[in-house]
Image (cartoon, rainbow, N blue to C red; front, side):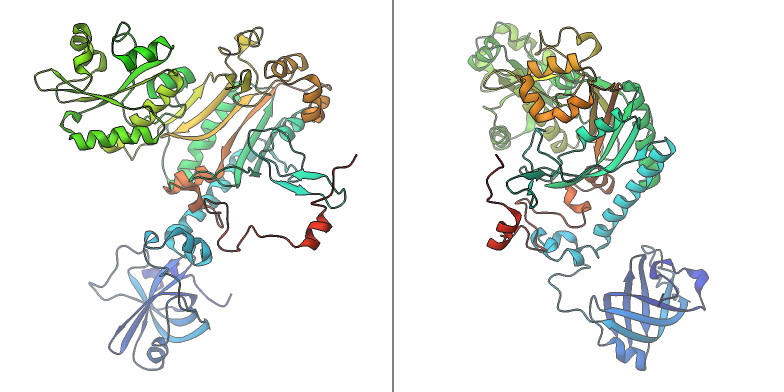
Length: 586
């Protein structure tokens, strides 16, 4: 190494030592005949002093992000000049020489400025500069620590790290595939895997029993803060299990991650709640439990109502529900209109509000339409006290009403400062629906068609698909889904009944999944697993809203890469060589 020490490792105990440091000029300050630079490398920052003479003269030519080699003597800072915010704040290096290893061009943005001072497009265009920032670098280090802990736990538990193919065949997994032409077989295409789902099940048939992989996955879908076209997941599968084996693994892995990566102790076991209860109480299958604001069911109160919007929803088999706003009766009409616009912006048909006045009377545009019993019982039914406000949602679809109420619950909690930001509230959501109806009729597998029905539904799931529950489970944290999985079907007869339920004929099943079904003819074991989004886990640990902040070179919301310019057109010669326009083989 051309340096003797890393900048961020110097402490008072190094005083008097001659050191050679290498890194970047984070800041430079001139004070008469004395110049100071903050020298930054991957380990941190230390202050370097250039006093009168040749070193100080050379320091005048240094600029931000110059890469330099500095030799000098470590000393303690004068009393009163210490910087308690820096691990190296008790010392400084008095330079005896400095060498510019490479100069930096004028910067597109100031690396040492706050990240929010630079627009994301520019940051991603110069991502290599953006990653020099402490917060950006911290996200990458947390991600590295996360995968280190995962590998350690999985190794201790006897899981094998096995890679599965990146070039495979297109199978229906819920999103569009990225496709790759096959030059050696013109007219045919590979697909990049949306997940290793089918291959990990084949590994169970192969008898490996305990598999994991930190796998790259690809989905051609619209992007948002927590979605990228290429992403990474922890993929886990094991044989001869039940759900408790999965819960046990996760409840060892997750606390270890939180303890070793960010120094937080997480209590286990995690609470469990059924999907139905999660939707009824919180309006979400990934409930945020950092506040107690639960949804209110007003179906009984308004069972005989003459309020048109409520009557229409209930007559159609829908739902009337509410969210309490503690102390919200003081909201102005402009603020209330803002909430109504918020609901419409999320696709809602509207939002009713009822304020409970100090004397207990109700104030609302709808209050005059309430019956005497509805007016008298409203506050008690909603759990409202004098000075509170109640937002009411009605929809002909119970599911849509609950989803709107769930989003409203979170928005109200954040607006009223009810969220305990320092808490980590994990929860298992279990007993998931097995199927959901399609708009055009028929049924669709909620998770995937290889998910096993609940034990009590094994004989009747195809007779009552709208009620059937699956052996599927998700782990949620603070309103974020961290991961999910299921126990798989391993018996051919049951698998075909699922295919029949979703309208997949035997011929179609063979076409789409033939290689897996063929393998299942050779004694497949009971198996199941779970997958976690590595990007999302890293973002949560680092305190970022967007997974882009913990990916080294992410794409923008449009799917582009400002750094490389990808995606780009290909030449006619490339199209010809790849066989892009070749007809499929006969």
